[in-house]
Amino acid sequence: MNTLKTMFLLTALTLFFIFVGGALGGKQGMTIALVLALGMNFFSYWFSDRIVLSMYGARQMSEAEAPGLFSIVRNLSSKASMPMPKVYLVDEDQPNAFATGRNPDHAAVAVTTGIMRLLSAEELTGVIAHELAHIKHRDILIGTIVSVFAGAISYLAHMAQWAAIFGGRRDDEGEGNPIASIAMMIVAPIAALLIQMAISRSREFLADEGGAALSGNPMYLAGALRKLQYVSEQIPMHGGSPATAHMFIVNPFSGGSFFLKIFSTHPPIEERIERLQGMR
View 1: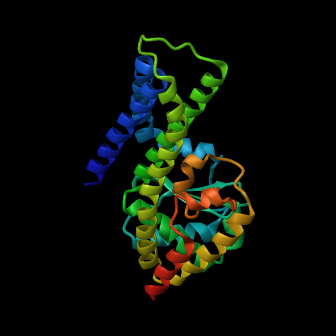
View 2: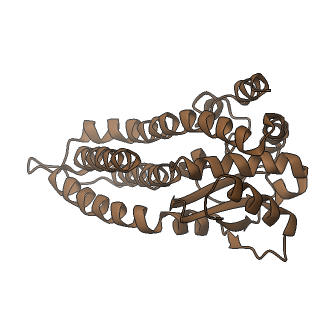
View 3: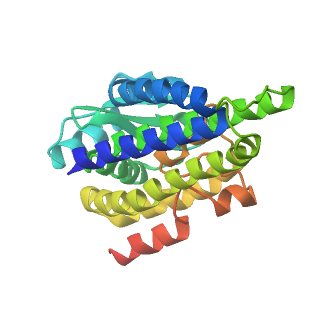
């Protein structure tokens, strides 16, 4: 079932990507977009985890560096009857975490230095359980693929904006419609954001529920989310891209912006905490 969902998502994103390319560059744009989409499909499946990890400068950790964290990951993985994922550290003061990889056998959990300093062992257990639930549900591949395509769609719109500024030649030979190009400059990034929102919001509730069951105490995650909501808004994420926002346990690019809060890739923290409290 998850394989079918992934294939459907890849097909839908490919068609949308080609449509955007055609609107921005006509037949030539469609051809370029098709070639790029085929390449991204290949790399998204096999190398998306490496792309995201390198985007944030994540470094694989050894057990000697963080024995407490490794103990949490190992115990929860054993409880979930799944292989222990690799553990990575992101050198960011903002407290956050995410999981990536194409399946439980090729998965990784990444935490920031900020979250290691902020949370107690119980709260960190709740966070890791949430990320392992993402892996257990096999939805991390979908999330990573969406981040790659969302970034590419936004990049296409950005390039079209520069082309319009410097004046690209348009004629009747299928090179694209100027009005359509202007419209896609606005619509494409919004569409990419909506795709992220649709994928992420339902996934977060399911991972919260699965993580609470895995950790054995929903209040571990509820307490962590309460802290993460407040501190993450005070400390910005310096690296990475908004295209990957939906992969994190809390939105790393909220930053207090009204627009970003309205179009957040995550459900409201208050609602997530309320649901977790209802599980007690």
